[in-house]
Image 1: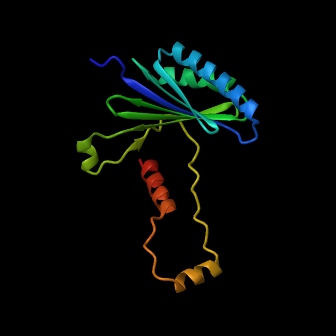
Image 2: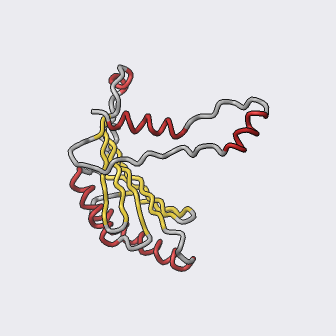
Image 3: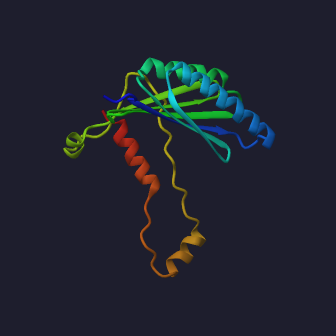
Length: 180
């Protein structure tokens, strides 16, 4: 039997306006805050890493239910501070559910997804979003229209390889996730 059944990945972002010293102080404060909150939730193997203007965190839990994840977010969001935002991804070892929590500006939002098994996924069943809690509508990214002058020059050049349309792929994924 597995001792750790859940894993969490965290990404804490600091605004660009922080001076180097403010960034170091905020990072130290956030690490202490996360360490305290995670230990109260029963987390083990807590690992921190710094990357530019962000702190990365990873840990495991022997057991993690929805209420414990929400308590964790409530604890963190109240003490996060201005200029700091975070996102946390909770994943269970059986890969049956995925929970994303977004924190910043004194509030937080949660989105949960159930992950189909291979048999269900290969039969055409798509990932379904947990609709027990309302969430804000996802914002669609718009593809900027090409400038006419650049477009005219590109058409005179040698034919380019077809590029992957990231915005269309994102719209398609969001449409799939928002279907019932």
